[in-house]
Image 1 (cartoon, helix red, strand yellow):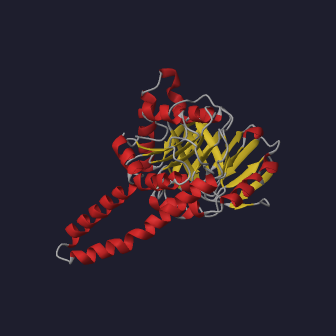
Image 2 (cartoon, one colour):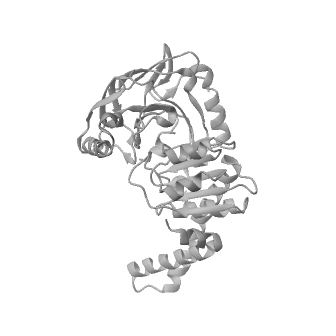
Length: 379
């Protein structure tokens, strides 16, 4: 962890920006060579303010609208080397609301669901607010679950980039998204069989406990023990373990990859039993296999649990190859493979990766919810 960077950002964030500008000028100079350096400096000054202003505006929205951070609250911002700009913008915005703000830069994880370093996990437990813009998701970690149990409200932003933080799903009206998701509630009541189909060949059926639908991933995370993704906008649930059967064709994105070749998952009794789809399928088998090797023998097959199902509800979200935003796109649905312990399941395996279907048709019992990506409901 770069604690010195965290301290420096707290002491004087202007120093960081100045160093970044100097580094930018050096890079430009090395590429362009003999051009007048004054022109380069002027170009740098011209180009830098817009992104800084956009980052600042989005950070202000997160602090004031999404998290409703109050004066005197303990706030921890956890970023990694890929998200330093966002961490710094959040730090500056939060510091205008509270004097009890800490920015930590931890090493980049290897995959979604990997536990943060112990000192970071310990710090999380002492906060009222945790903001986590990181390359890989901390949502499904023991550290976040414990922080939430201890009273923190947490916003995770796995895979967030400067562009995602300032455009697309993050530019949505989260109060409208909250209303849209809430309006789904009556349609879920007493319906327990979910069927998903697509023109690409998906045909899968599973059971849910309708009382377990999660309708609070709406970007408004203003009370203790709340947890959200940003950008937000999905309604989701854990499929009842052992009930899912059929064929699932992922045609939108998988993790951080916008697919040009579909992934076919064969599912029996809630477990993925085969993965097809060229090189990306081979990569999936390898990644999940490596995680499984670290588990006890009796737990290894649990990495293939179908852990989560949900609908995208954010009308500004884009399909761009980052599942954080892809799975929120209005009219899509997604399935996650791996750890379902955060949703009350028995698969605590430390990996949780979603895949997105672009134009699904979905039924709850005999009621159709989506037809080829279009909601059939008045929401």
